[in-house]
Length: 222
Image (cartoon, rainbow, N blue to C red; front, side, top):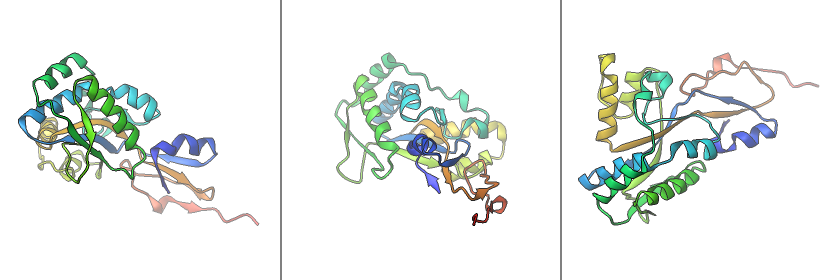
């Protein structure tokens, strides 16, 4: 059974057996694509305190990341910057539209709400006002994207990128995808599973897929 990441610590404290995949869920912001909002996108990327969110809200699970593909998959995620620069964020925000922006996230996902609330605070520190969206459209949206392949070129294509035949071009292709979809990647998170006591030899693939052929069940004790 897949568990919300927010429930991992509680499940472990209750003695529930858990399995954790490699990071295969990308948490990111999408920002509408006007010229002014592109400056806002750059400002948000610099304003968000990723380490604080990762340490406190995410319980140090997964990785801080400025990339869509995790480091274990691409080998170059560390090249995408993640450092906070509030001064530069304020300068960019000041040169962009100053009206409040609508902000949305999946209200059914318990992991996203506290992250969204912290992003609102970080954005305000940079001079950007984010207010909850009242309709289906939003200027800024917090999203969770699943990495669906352990082949980096295919994973990027499934996220909406163009096919890449030359592995040396992968970084540029990912950079282009982030820019074209107006994305601000924030974190790479694992998938967490709760395991029944009778399940043995449980394994998952690197993208969190179940390898049921390896699983066997103990017979209940009389």
